[in-house]
Amino acid sequence: MGDVYEREINSFTLIRLLTVDEASQLLNMSKEATWRYVRAHLIPSVRVGRQIRFDEKAILEWIKNGGCSLKQRGPKRNDRNN
Image (tube, rainbow, N blue to C red; front, side):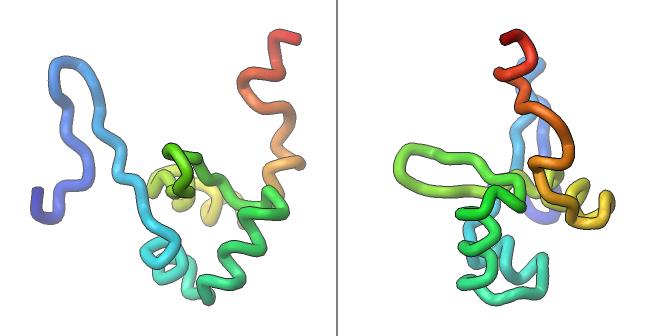
């Protein structure tokens, strides 16, 4: 894939999911600090089976928004209908 992080295949967009090591490097913080942010729900992350991954675009958007707490952004998408 090279430097291309997203591709569109049959109208589906592939999302680049980062490991904790990659997210920590992007954020310039330790893995331990990244895990603390995940446990405190301060950073956007997704669970893939038993693993935690980070949507690169969501992380970059989070940084752009000043790294605000996810709780400050309002309800999660699933909670809006309840």
